[in-house]
Amino acid sequence: MALETAGPASLAVGLLVMMFSALLRSEKRRPSASDGGPSLLTIALAAPGAGRRSTQRLAEVAVQDELLVVCSGSGAPAIVTELRRRLPRHDVVALDISSAAGVQGHHAVVLNDLLEIGSLPVVAVPARHATDVAAQLSDFLGADRVLRAAGRTELREVWRRTDRHLVETSSLGS
Image (cartoon, rainbow, N blue to C red; front, side, top):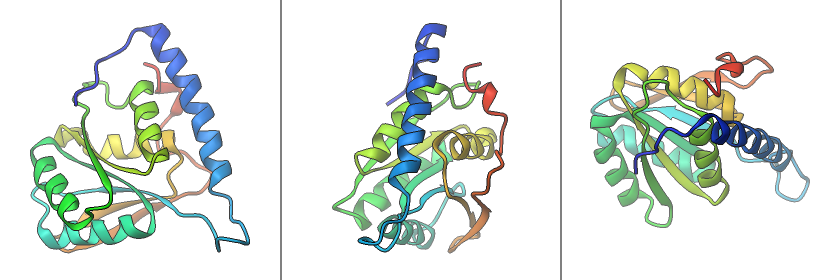
């Protein structure tokens, strides 16, 4: 599914909804005594041509955490197919964000909604924008960590949530 670019009014409304959703999201993830703690929101940056072992590691992360995968458009179909095969009870949803401006407010709202209902979004972006999109989504969605595929089998943590932002959040609506 391709997401269309919205007008300024839609972006402003989307920004407000996204900010409210992010606040609710952070409230939901606070530890409680009954469940032993919150799940993490993890954003994984998949390498182009990710192999089966790399996708197996992504599936293992998805079992423990809320997961959003960012990959280049050409590698998305194979990753989606393999995740669906490995996680038959998960709702793996492919989204194509081919906007030259990267992630915009309405993208973040849709992705937040998908995560809220328990889906595993796989976001396909142009290869040259993948790292920037992962950073933007991390900030917009309040991700707890970002992983990057290292080689064909390994995922390495490249960032963990602190109070700092990876990108300037005022650029959300532009």
